[in-house]
Amino acid sequence: MACETMTKDYCTDAVINSSIASFKTLLTHHSIQVDRLVDYYYTDANAAVSVGRIIQMLCNCLKARNKIIFVGCGKSLKIANKVVSTLQSMGMSSISMHPTDALHGDIGTVGEGDCIMACSTSGETEEIIQLLKYLDEKEIWHGENGRRIQKVAVTAEAHSTIGSMSDECLLVPKKVKECEVQNGLKAPTVSSTSMLIVLDCLSLALSQAHSNGDLATRNKVFEVMHPGGKIGETTRSNGSNTPPPTRTIVDAAKIRCGMSELDILQAVILYDWIDWDGKKQVPSVVVQSHYRAWKKSNSGAFDQYLNDILSSAAI
Image 1: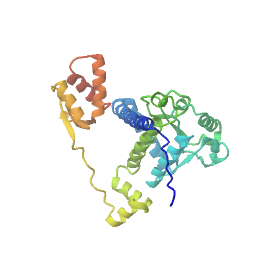
Image 2: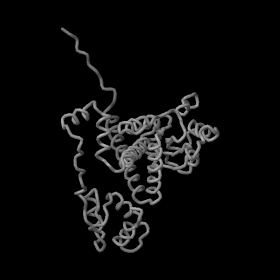
Image 3: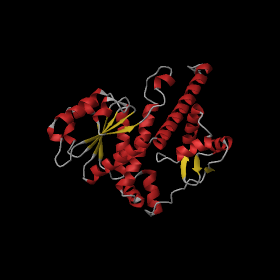
Image 4: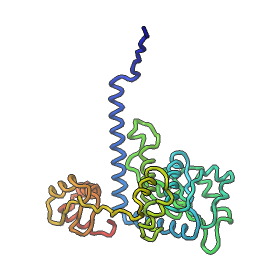
């Protein structure tokens, strides 16, 4: 008779239940952080203008047959690797590089007119700082006829060392610090997700600008560059490079000046998007953010307060 081996669960039910709660809590903090990014880029006029300048800078770089170089350490470098793959799949020249490897010879791949994307949540990564200093010091990379290397900091701290050393800053504002929501654990989670999301959004926006707004051409390039996997199989079976029509935002609640506070809040809860007076559509999380600000300021009626905000050029 064969002996039956009994295995004993390592974790108690209490530990498992606590771990499940931690899973859901961190998931919530990721969602809250994404809401923070949406609110920032929809409502801060300087943020939107900065994104426009960065896209123009990167477009100019690519059109001049130069490349985009992503630099990072640790998790930031892994994110950079993913973003580089995305850009390459749409025909845009880009590479990733560890700053230490750069200072041990890989810097030879950096050419005049290239753009450096320095990825560091803190903006104080010493290896990146040393690389940027070296590039600034050596005349070989100063360029002629304006073809110097340009630098973009991808960071949560605009006034950090790396932010100050860069021409532009793609800000990834933080709602909370990891150690505050992970029982003291400083492992990058929410900040890494934020950087990836912002860079993914930049990549797709850049691809649109790089194709001069011709999305059909942009999509065709991607299909040519991605013949493998399910994506390639779908492309071959369709036998067409015509992109499907973009889905319009149909689940937007219509709100306007003159509506009650309760009616506006109900619309914000029930819908992901808000259509303000038929003039513009914004995510409902942006209206939620302004509602919190209004409650603190207690300045007049909410509908009028919201009208003033949504009528601004920042949105």
